[in-house]
Amino acid sequence: EAGVTQSPTHLIKTRGQQATLRCSPISGHTSVYWYQQALGLGLQFLLWYDEGEERNRGNFPPRFSGRQFPNYSSELNVNALELEDSALYLCASSPGQGFRNQPQHFGDGTRLSIL
Amino acid sequence: AQTVTQSQPEMSVQEAETVTLSCTYDTSESDYYLFWYKQPPSRQMILVIRQEAYKQQNATENRFSVNFQKAAKSFSLKISDSQLGDAAMYFCAYHSGGGADGLTFGKGTHLIIQP
Image (tube, rainbow over all chains, first blue to last red; front, side, top):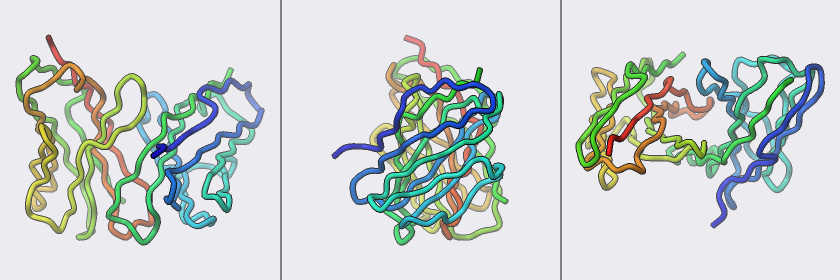
């Protein structure tokens, strides 16, 4: 069974640009979570999608957005990039809202570097 | 809001010895789940063990076990017979039983295995 896959592995952008990160969940999983792992700030919850809808978001500005497609894959978009957006972005999936006791499984992450 | 605290930024243990990583959390909820994840340099977050708050019995997974003290809001991880492959960052994480948020992570403990 394939795990959570993320692309690209590494993304280099400059300030003010937009970045798009992609995530494919484990087959059968309907929930996708996005986390930011920035140096010194630890892992922070960004967004949660389930069944195509945004269910909740963490304490991040609106320039962090995303969507979930009918096949449950997801995109994270970051607009107007700032230097402090440099981080590892992790995607995780779980079976869905009705399976809250099931753990989240993570991908390898996308390293976003802002020059 | 929930908080997770890992008070040991770094721990070192001799190969084949036992080590315990500490984690405390703060919550007003009664229904929640606790997890330990490891993140080796390859950066993928790997689930080590999980504990449901309603279960009194401590979870075990092979060489990994937890000491869950619900009243004290403590959730420590014991690694027995430490192996070189156990070297990684270890993160304690909390998930609300309501499932409306993502995981709340501690800052992590860097575990070093001395050969």
